[in-house]
Image (cartoon, rainbow, N blue to C red; front, top):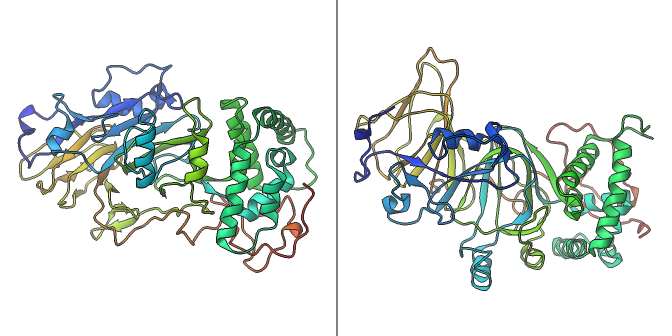
Length: 478
C-alpha cells in the first residue's frame, strides 16, 4: 500500500484516496455477488460483507444524502471547496427498481418547495449509464404502433385502460403532438385504474402467460423473441412485486438488454425502470426521484403523469467513442453540462497517461491492477474498488501494467462535461436512430392489418418499428 506521505490533502496537486457511501436498498444484489459490496470492502467502508444483505449503490460525490470523505474522514466537499456538479455511482441491481422519472430544474424546485421530505434538493437529475454486466432496463415509452398491438393482443392489459384512452390511441393522427396527447391519456388511465381491477386483470394475465410459457403448451404459431421477452419480464416483475400493476410496465415501456461497455442517457422527465445487472451511473448532483410503481417507497403518480414529456422510442445506445487520439480511452458524453464519463483501459505491458483536466474529477478502479506515477511521485493502490479524487490542473497520472499480468487495468473517470459540443448520447426525444423494439416499413401502416403476433428474426437489440402513419385501420373491439 502506498505510504501516507504520498497524500497531502492541503495540496492542490495530489490525487487523494476516497471513502464512498454505500446504500442498502432492497433491490440490491446480496453479499459478495454485488460489485458494490466488493468495492465497499476494498475501499474500507465496511469490514465484512453480510451474505444476506443487499448492496445496491456506491456513491462518489458531494451530495448530502451520501457524502464522500477522504480516508481520514474529511468531507470531500471541504476539499473541493463546494459541491461537485455530478454524482458518480456504481449500481448492483438484483431486482427491479421503481418505475420512475427525474424532474427538470423547474420541476425540481417546485417539488422541493412543496415536499422537501421526499424531494430533498432542488436540482434536476439527468443520468448516464454504462453497463458493466449484461443489463436489463425499461427506458422510454414504446411507440403508439407497438402499444396498439399489445392492447389488441392482451385483453387483461386493455381492461386496465379506459375506452376513451384506447380510442385515442387507435384514432390518433400522424401529428406528433396528437400522439403525445393520446399516450398521456393512456398512461394516466392505466395508472389511475382501480386497484381491484388492476389486480384482478394482473392475475388473469399471469395465469395465461404462465400457461403460454410452459413447455407443454402448444403454440399456434412461432412466438417472436420480443414477445417471449416481454412475457417473461412481466412474470418476473410480478413475482418480485406481487399485486403491483406496475408489472405490466413492459407493455408501455421499451424493454432493453444492454451489453457491457454500452451506454444510454435518460434525460429529465423520461420514464424508466432498471431491472437487473450492474452499471456505472453518472448524473447531475441530485437525489430526486418521482416514483409510480414497483416499489414500497413513496409513490407520486399525479406528479409523474404531469411531468413526463411523452416522447416515444428508446434512448440512443452507444458504446462510446475514442478520445484524445487513443482508442484505449472511451468517452461517453451526454447532452448536458454537468458530467461525462471515460472508461480507460491499460493492457499488460503498456502504460497510458490520463488526460490533463481543468476541472475536478473522480475515478474508480473497475478491474485489474497496476502501477501509477506522476510529477509528485504518487504510487496509488490500484485494485478494483479503489477510488480517487483528482483536483483540477493536477499533474497528469500515468498508469502502467506489468506484462506478466493476465488482464488489463480498467478505470472509470467522471468529471464536468468537456465535450458538450460533441455528445455521443441522446434521449428518446432527440434520438432518430432507434424506433422501438420491433420494426415495420416506414410507409403507411394499417394497425388493424398488423398481426397481433408479428414474426421477426430479432437479435439481442431487436429490430425497430420506425415512426409510421396510423391510418386506414379498423377500430378494434374495445
